[in-house]
Image (cartoon, rainbow, N blue to C red; front, top):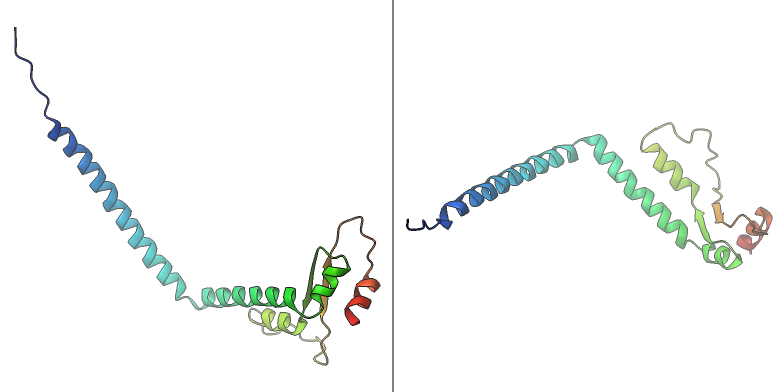
Amino acid sequence: MRPRRERRSGRNNQGCLIAVLVFLGLAFLTMVGLGIGIYRLSQDPDVRKMVSAAGEGLSVYVDARNAPGAETLRELGCQDAMVIDTARLVELARTFEPDAGTGFDEGPVSPMLICQVGWRSELSCPDIVGAYVQ
């Protein structure tokens, strides 16, 4: 009878170790490439302008939801209510188009009221404006 040959477990593990190291190396190179790409993209003036405008748009939205009168509209029956300062919207539009808002009356700015209601709601625009004005 022949003696049994014992398997060398170390040799099989070397292949797995090499595969893991190659995978980690490729993952590292991918991350470095993405980092460089994101950095270069962030230096583009147009991208900076868009990111800044997105932040300002979010600020307009948050301020509109918390503006005086918005809670009154929600109590009236609006599922969601906002009181938007239209002058801020014009300034936001001018970020991309300097001529935006030409012809916009630069006088006293009236707020834009937004009241989201269900399709069976009895609320009308005069009801909403009346509640806001009070």
